[in-house]
Image (cartoon, rainbow, N blue to C red):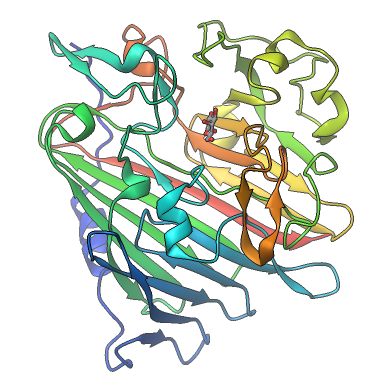
Length: 393
Ligand code: GLA
């Protein structure tokens, strides 16, 4: 039996509970911190086809950065950051309306769970049982199934009590939802910090052993308001290697060295530099869609960025810090002109890129200890933090 525990101290739990307090005395639809001017505004954002009312929250930090986040799928709908001239523009892809997200969302901005990325053949064995999952990506299971955490309604509580704009989202995933065992209490906290970062903390507690692998699926385009593709963005990844995939984009198993290959982003490199250079692995997913195994010693304590991204025209620079052992770097290969986004912009292939911090895809089908464990036992807790920090150069 696989055993792994990510335990938190009791005091940490108390801090978490405290984090749910709403700002006392604030207007019903507004929470703000007077000293720092961090602010959260709530507005109605329409109804789901079943009538459920959905809200959208605007988080603003003291420097005027703003993030719009909805409790449908925990989606980051927009994220405005300054360019080197101070011009605020949106750096994530997405839609203007709830209806469009409900109709067809290629995972723009959402929380992904219970298991981010693919599980081969839509099944795995755990504790002597075989669990069958939806095959919603060819023969494989992708991003938690037909109705993953990206399509559920989260309970939202805004909080500015610590001088920063935070949105606490909670969701209880019932036993066997999408085929996964155990009730799972999930909390995701988005904070727009006064250091110009979008910080995402994830917590989950099961009542049976179950696999958990959560991430956020924002597509970044640092040109602002998505002016063109992301091929000129310079990316760096603090990685030891990457996981090659098969035709169904399932890792084949061997950690492969980066040395000088198209996959080597250890020094900043334009995403477009090698993307069309004919590497066999880049033909499979029509671009980058792979798991980079982070140099954990350097990155897991969040002192060094796991990734950085620079867009030369706007000067925007984004650093990614994470406690997770890997990043799925996806270069937006399947956008394909199918999605008309905010401002009427039609997103073509490679107009946005995702840096999905997570454990490795298909870990549930790997033998114990081969890869970092994704099983959470009852009585223990999943906890994970990722920070997307913005500045200019
Ligand atoms: C992930 C996957 C991609 C694709 C996108 C969503 O990044 O790795 O293959 O499925 O999500 O379109």
